[in-house]
Length: 292
Image (cartoon, rainbow, N blue to C red; front, side, top):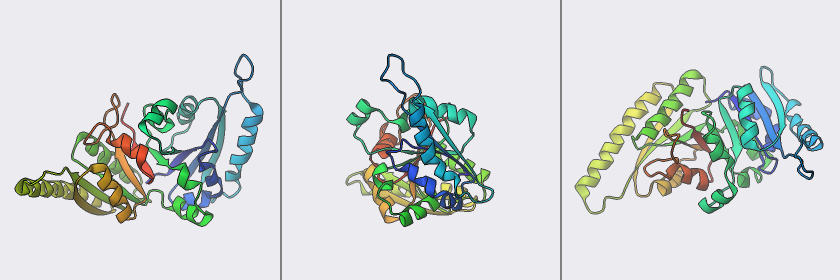
């Protein structure tokens, strides 16, 4: 689905382990990989300055990615000093990439307000989609498990769809990448629509479920025309709960979400849906940032 990737790591999120799996990332469709880390500034004096010793140590660690590079695959390593939300946009300005891979721990809304979230902050600064992976998982994968994960990062996407503006935007962005890279690593997707519980009104319930299925069938035809396998499911209940259950049931690689609104919080059927997925999903999340 993507051919160029910026992998951002703070060396505590586990993503630096990927330097040993460049061939597997290449098998997953990547042809250009940039490993990047922001080293904190030295702040013991009155004026913050670049910690050259720290920068050098980080470079030495990430440079392992350059040791086993398959033919026709480009790999770069970049290290800067400063805060990630200051340094990452500068790297993106100098390197065009299709996706940013970043680690974000599971946090509550209160923790996010106090400590911040690089992924949410970054989504407001760039149109480049983010693939968000949980450090709690990637640090515990065996080498064999991590090898397979690198090959299948975007193999099977779960796509929530409710026929709203953000859902249309999400499908638009996925179709764009499928058209851009016909020989894609994305092999299958699961379109899922969740209908709110309508109580005892059986006729209304049946109508809404049927309407949701018809809308999914229309989107399914659009995606199948681009050469991928598309499954569909319509469920009733809480969108977040049903989507997490479906991710387990269908053995998906990642959940894809988006918002079409840059000047508001992320939204789905409620303003907090996409934020809830980013904050609470153990599954990798592919978030398509809104246009500037």
